[in-house]
Length: 482
Image (cartoon, rainbow, N blue to C red; front, side, top):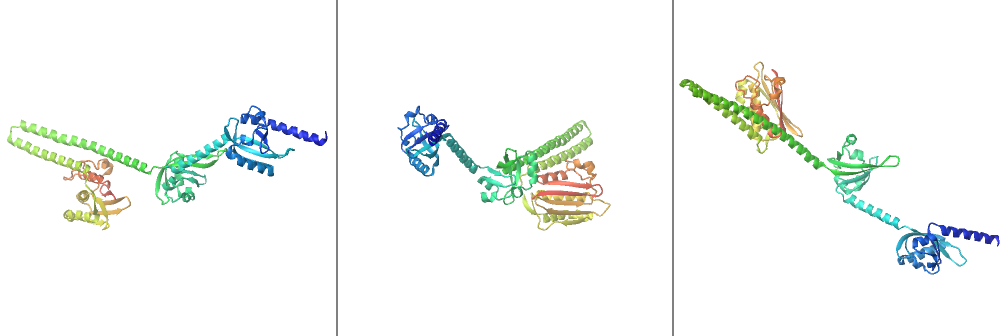
């Protein structure tokens, strides 16, 4: 044999070796018939021997009818370019089962004419996995887009890369594109420092700034996506609007606080009833017993006068307690009143005492200031406080009463100041608004005015504060909700 023949033989033997032992299923055809197959082909296609298919089976034996045309076109392409790839073609096994395959077709030279070698790889599982991944992706997008909660993906630099329509609506933006364009750190947080503090304390509820500048409280469920070195790539999260939930929680806490306050008042009221009425009752019982034991008409007359006085005091006590009950259970509607007119009316009612006592009066209240109150309560409050300033004036100096008012966003503050004899708050502060608590020796002091005034103010949702210095004067501050 010549050197050329030997070389050709060596190449042929090498090709046959690679062909037979290739892990890929290979078959050779000449456009019409299957001319050769390797061992991997027999395993993949389910044939027991080469004799079952070589020289007998046409191409249509292996290729699905719907893919025959594209397979032949790919073969023609390989003929002119030496090789081509079909990413997905349906091939058929001996048992007629179809599977998806990736086919590499290459033209090989032969003395018998054009031959083609086809490497076929089963990609059924890969395609199914791709389909499953694609379907999962579609399902995720459906959930993403239809979720009632806001869903986002953002970068460590503070930019959104993906948001759903619920988040767009929640934050008051007009489109996803508009929200994607914002700087999260400066346009979404009121104070980024607050967010860091809450994150450090593992709190998942915090306020965000909507497009119009209003606040919305959200509950954040999030996690970081990191690379293999632990660096943060993205921040994924779900935001739920809990503004209404927190408002209801605050309302409930406020209601519980009111209930607790009312309960304390009820306990105090029960104690007052028990103490005061029991005192009157035991006193009346004793007087009646003494009266029965006395034979002298004069003595009986004296005890009868004592009983009359005691019953009058009992009636007064019951009347006072009834007034407190009326205030605490009042459902009277509030009305708008001009505060300056109400104050002027109070000073007119007390003008006789003011003139007789030579008290200077100063009123600093805007003429158009309106307050929403229960009118009868406002009259009583002003009368009680101004009357106290007159009653407890100092005889050592010229007296004055000054009443001022100002309004802010939440309340109207009314302040009544005087330079009277004052109260020793170090000694009496805790008892200041107690029932029947008196701090001076005046004969007409009943210790009931401040108690009633406090109840009336609180029943309208306000509060009262008193500052006083002995022999200097007193300042009473009344806060009424707007």
